[in-house]
Image 1: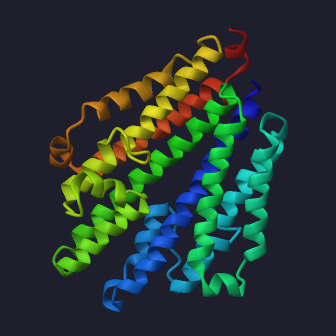
Image 2: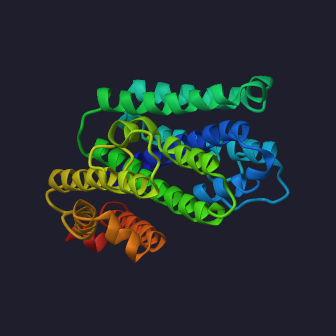
Length: 317
């Protein structure tokens, strides 16, 4: 596979995953605003922007912030910007993806641009964010159902789950820091609602309740989102998929990739497979999550050096 094709498939997947994640956090945040009093919502937009890794413009009011993160094409990380970038990457490799994949992504893009800041969004933002999430999920399902599970599909998988792992780690880190600041200020019901909000931001509330009931213990929440082997948005699950994808790519390319990227993913997977939440919390959750995000960037860099931005000498070797 040409390196430019791998690059486009990888970023097509990452950008769409980012758009879905951003739409989900916006949906949860706008709904939470209806549940909390004004004295408890002061830091919510700073929390949201921090979770997304987007600089906050203090001049934006609540509605202005939501509109910017949703529709501002000049803001990296906005829903529209991410979907547009995903579509552009897909357009460059249309011959490598199925027609159904292109049609779904194009349909989602046109829906977003058509909605814009219309009355329908202002009246019912929840419906809009649901349509973005469902559009991204539908694309993922179509991809799995209509594309051969070969080299290209594995680059899509690697991109999706590297993006998901990093985004989830950043969200957990920001949330725990936020809750520490609220510890002495908030009533127990508000704290409970905030932990529910974190789980809903990861689509994990119902899955968590099936294991731990609705008892919101910070330690249990952290353990579930970090170390659960079966939940699709836990850090452990994401890294498992990344390593499997890199192994598949290495085999399909004659073992060329069985180097740094695969070793880094394997080492990170082992740390999560055998990790204990007590040890993680004792050593510092924020430091652990920062180190985890650094490892994700190292895997990304190693993947790029091996398959995409390698030198001519490496290719000939």
